[in-house]
Image (cartoon, rainbow, N blue to C red; front, side, top):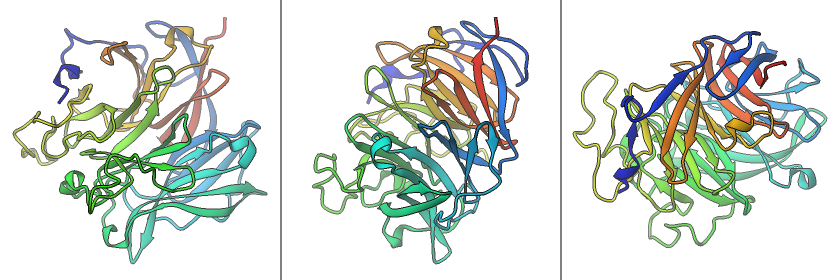
Amino acid sequence: MSSTRFLNVTVVSSLAIFCAWQTVGGQVISSEKEKFQVEVVAEGLASPWGMVQLPDGRLLVTEKRGDLRVIEGGKLLGQEVTGIPPVFAKGQGGLLDIELHPDYAKNGWIYLAFSDVKDDKGLTKIVRGRLKDMAFVDQETIFEAPLDEYTGGGAHFGCRMEFDGKGYLFFSIGDRGDMKTAQMLSNVKGKIHRIRDDGSVPEDNPFFKEPGAARTIWSYGNRNAQGLKFHPVTGDLWEVEHGPRGGDELNLIEKGKNYGWPVITYGINYNGTPITNQTEAPGMEQPVIHWTPSIAVGGIDFYSGKLFPKWKNNLFATALAHQKLVRIEIGDDNKVKSQEILLEKSGRIRDVRCLADGSIYLVYDEPGKIVRILPAAS
């Protein structure tokens, strides 16, 4: 257990929280360390979920209902990419995250995470394919759960994907609303997973040789991870996950560790009843911070560009219900030094992507649009 890392964001005396601005528009926004402007890139999307930029500058955006869209030259193309697998578009399910292979320029692989549907039930699946003339071709299944783990209902699919620098793909799967599964190594739900880029399972995964365990598991006790990123300097894996009513978490994910859900949590049931009377327990990790009340965390990304030098290596976290973009400073000791609210009440922000040119792109679930953050004009 790592209780010394815990810091509740409601303890204002221990954590500085600044609010820079309240809405998205053309005005100059003066934050604590940088001045910036927000401009709309594309509108008219249907609950966009994930986004990547291709080397040629085009943007690929997933829509939860099951469409893959292309933004080219600042224009949202009317034609959807064909060949996308059918999705379980129910509740939080649908077409979710998208990632490029680290050697995309050589092999063209694009990875899609989505809620697969079988017998009117759903569970997270990952495929890869290539984009050719607005079609998703050469498809291969990279990860697929056992059929007996598929369930009905539309809650807690995950799924974020992230490649490390060694060719391994990490991804999250939520507990699907069945909280007890997060503590069970015999299934894939409520976990962070690790596989190779071709879907094979590394033998040094922590539970690879444990009888009955899902060999892909990297960590467990994770309720519904919505953000997953490696620190650009340390290489540490950071994650954010939805709590229930309260207790959204920022976690430092480590091999084989148990993050506690639902045995320990800082949240309660949505009807106000307790889930557990424990917020810590032996052998279970504490969150680095938790947000109580919940902000409904979405995607995260670290900033390593040059347009905003004072934000270098800061972590950006999005929020749905609280409609926020939060900038988080993490110290060398892996503790949060401060937080700043950069945007608030501008819409439900699903994801954030810090691109190579130094700009920061935001994916808005509602209203469905893509915007980017740029330095304020001099």
